[in-house]
Amino acid sequence: MSGNNKAKNKKVLLRCKNLWKVYEKNGVQVPVCCGLDFDVYENEFLCITGPTGCGKSTILKMMAGLELPSMGALSLRGKPITKPNRERGIIFQEYSMLPWRTVFQNVCLGMEILNISPKERKEKALKYLSLVALTYAKDRYPYELSGGMKRRMTLAMVLVTNPKILLMDGAFGALDAKTKMVMQAEIIEIWKKESATIVFVTSELDEAVKLGDRIIVLNSKGAVMKIINNTLPRPRHGKVAQEPRFLRQFVALREEVFITLKAGTVQKGAS
Amino acid sequence: MDIEGNVSPATEKKEVGAGNQTSNGTSTAATEAVMARFRQQIEITKLQKFIQFFTEKKYYFIGLVAILSTWQILMFVQVLGPDFSPSFSPWAALLAFIEMVTSGDLSRHTWPSLRRVFYGLSLSVVFALPVGVLIGYFTKLEQMTYVTFQFLRMISPLAWMPVSIIIFGVGDNSVVFLLWLVAIWPLILNTAHGTGRVSQLWINMARTMGAGDWAILRKIIIPAAIPDMLTGLRLSVGISWIILVPAEMLGVPDGLGYYILDTRDRFRYDQLMATIVTIGAIGYILDSIMRMFIRRYAWKI
Image 1 (spheres, each protein chain N blue to C red):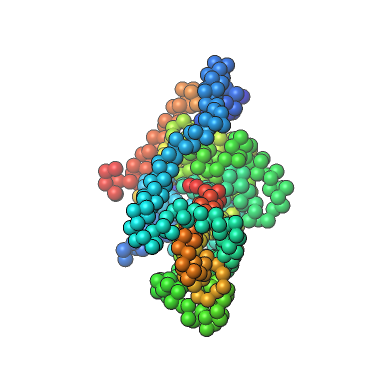
Image 2 (cartoon, helix red, strand yellow):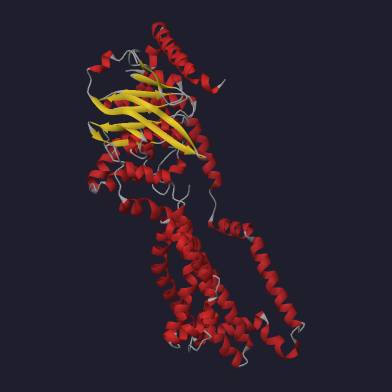
């Protein structure tokens, strides 16, 4: 584990300590997370990547409190995580909105659960709808939305509950190439505007390199291969991203992630 | 200004364009002109609309007329013999129907029937929805009740008639009890099915937003099961209406079921046929109302 000197003087928000998760499959115990040890710092954009089936999503579910670790502990600002709580908002890989509610009503859901007054609800919902550029579609139903719009809506649904940490599970995987790039730029904007802390699970190298402050690379067994400090300057979209110096750095970093990933995948054969 | 800021409004416009071609502000004057011409073309008068309705639905009407004609012809050639055939024809039924409406006999028997069905359904909704939600939510409870419910629902409520008369006596209460008994099964089973297939994803999402069990029940599970509840209610309405007629033959002094026996006893077979047609028509209307409810309130995916 090298290269997080810069991050060391930052405040720890979420701590994973010797985290294990073992599933039972047909009577055989299959480990998906093997002794994960890492911290998530405040206002950090942390990307977790790794080969298929390495337990990336499981880590997020444990962070959200939807699954309990088999061993080890997770804590948010020192408090242990035992069950779901609105401090940790999660955006699932699937679109998790309620089909009988309009975009606006879906965004209000979290605030209804928290018993926030209707007036404040409306104000806040509109604020976050404009943040994700969905105000014009607020009265539509989910089945009338495109993939990118659904993604932005689930984002607003979670942001509106003011989580301390935002967990995103392969959030842009199902989007087309153009929408994906737009969403990547937008999530960075939102991250800056809200000074949020984001843990972003992705299986795409480019995405991890483009978004993360740090990139945690897991191997097929579900152990940490390497934590890579992403020194690429921000912003990483637009004109800056066309400069040769940026591109060289970008490709070099992606290569580093790729080599690490490849080294961690060999046990499972050619893939 | 970086590119990031410019990219997002551009997609927004594109996506608006996909849903609504005229309000995105990007369409040119040329598009506008084409659209105006298109709108002109599809503008039609009320009479044209009326004609269009009949042209589209013509086979429904043709079928109906064919059936009625066949019925009339069969009675005209006296398939039921010279004594009965004339009074069983649709024409005789129509005349009897008009007579029954004007004399007030029909409404005197229709309202009690509708009232009984309404009471039976209301009581079954009050009972079956909570039971259905509980069974759908708690797998153990579903397993505990499975055999009993599948067994009970196969018994015609009319078999319970003597029991019902012992408990409630002859009269309205007995009929309402039988209707309740027949209406609860589709409601319970459909509600349980709807509750049981609520996506774990929605529940997980609500829990990470801080929802407790009560909030999950109110915000996720019940609304998610509404389409299935309505389907169950539609089935219950249908079967209640079917069971109503025999149930009303159990010693109540009015209602459409009673009236069937009454017309038979008075040898008024034309009135009998008119009552049968009325029962069918009211059943059809009730079902149409339920279908309308489902279209209006069941959410789409």
